[in-house]
Image (cartoon, rainbow, N blue to C red; front, top):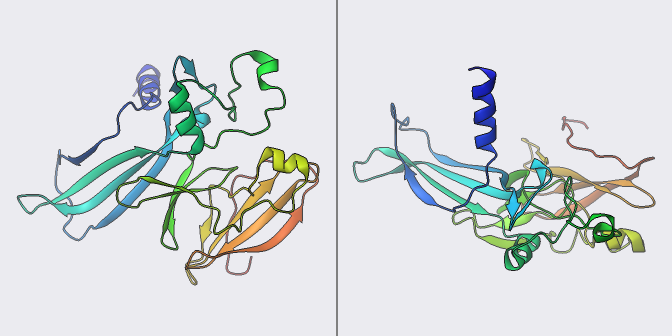
Length: 246
């Protein structure tokens, strides 16, 4: 494939999704193995425009979760794949839908109006667009710097923000930290211990004293704060590795 064709594919892959659908996908070639069963979830930026305003960065696109139920049968008893997609109805998504325009800053997107329109706007939009994970009986749409959003595993309806029964409330924060966020961040790339089923994750708290919060979530979905580690500078921590001892 030449560069022009690759560019066309890349551009088409980053067009805004305009419809939420559910359908049985046709088998174009071959067939699904009879013993292949399960559900695959995917998440990523799905909308890049609100009203007549375009987001300034691909990472700011509103989260769109896809669900592929593999192995369900149709009238001819052959395995099929049932597909569904839904946008994550974050609080910000709902508010902007009602207003028909951009109301929040993003990672690479400022509000129209220049410096005055963005001055002291320290809270960024949580698009819930980076990862999706099922653990402890919850399906969660994740973002790097905010709370997860809980989804119905079948319909993908948004059930609301998940602060793990208040465990992620930013109760001991300074004024400026509370101004940035009333809750502690929960990163988009947690890891599950294959031996215990526990989930480990972190969040980077920004403010006068940046720090790394380390969490453990047991198999029943109860979150425990493992450690708070001050860091010297504001940093963007994206991912980590889980080993048997560390």
